[in-house]
Image 1 (tube, rainbow, N blue to C red):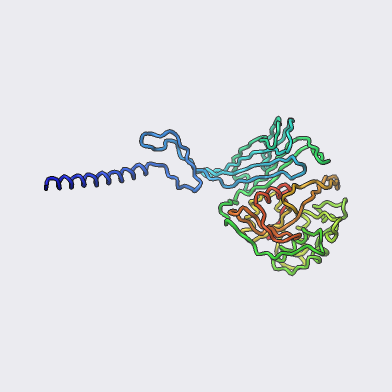
Image 2: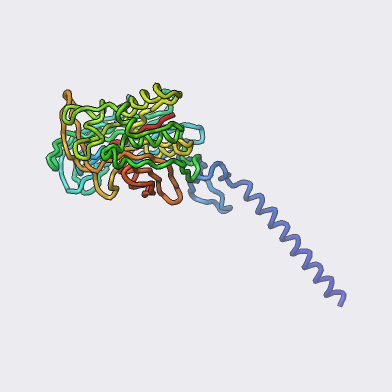
Amino acid sequence: MKKYVSCAVLILLCLICAMVFYVNASDLWQNNTPPTETNSNATTETGSENEGGLVEDTFTPEDTMLNGSIYGEYLTSSSLRIEWSTTTTADDKVYLSLELYLDTPDTITKTGNGYIMINDVKKDFDSVLAVGTSTLLTTHAQAIDESFGNELNINAYLSLEVEENGVKLDGLNANGRILLNEDNSTLPLSHKIALEHISQYPSLPSGDEITSLAMVLKYLKYEINTVELCDMYLEKGPVGYTSFFEANVGNPKSAYNSFGCMPPVLVKATEKFVSANGGSYVANDISGIDAHSLYSYVSQDKPVIVWACENFSVDPQISHIWVIDGETLYVKSNISTMVLIGYDYEANTVTLADPAGTIFDIDMDIFEMRFSQMGAYALVIE
């Protein structure tokens, strides 16, 4: 009996020793595995494995800093679209990648040429277009050094004769601005500004621009009367003779003969108002900025005046074409000015204060598309 007990004890000791060896051996293998904790988005290029299961290829961490879309201003149903992203490598070098698409509802076959310009760096391209609904025209990658600064102006142009709905163009454009120092991953997942809604009705049936400005000024603690703001501080000009970059086209008190204005006009109105009522606020025209970068302002409790749509389910259309002082101006139907006061990445929505309606949420992707198609016009007061 003692012999059997001794054998059992010996077997038990052997099992314990084997387990200890296994644990230590596992630690040794793990210590030879490349670390993956460099960042949460790190990727490992895996190649062939040796008998020990170790990865042979080098580990190159990459982290996508920013990405987004820039839509061409919507003048016809054919439009340019830029898909962009910036990446940083382990040695802190930043690269910008661009893909330029032509979106069109019909199949066309034409030869087109154009360019992509990043600040002052220009790349020409030629394409034979056999186009369905979306065709990749060209790609571009650019290393970004300190000479570019923190802001990139992106301009794409395609020489392509287009005639739709009476609108004749000899080319299509897409323009936008990218802020390299705005990492969306550092923003709160959601933020909403407590801004009081002001209606443009009944006094200003065409006054969505000046009423949007009134909402922001009231948020900044000014006493506001929207009619006085319109009468005393908003420059106005006659329809057909006035550029909406210089003054409000028509009178916002008219429901039928007013076509609004663009950010430079509200910048001047803000300057006059602040000068007369005190304060150190400055209105900044941030038009062309990528839509995601708008959310950075909102996260800092800065509401942003944006030019968007009355009806987000309807494509913008050209209603009038004017030539003012040699400049061709395309007047769009369905355009409306609102105040961006919130975003929610998890719900994929943004919150807008609409002078012609109320405060509401809209799908983030639809908002960004319409914002860009309308020309990416925006203004913030700081």
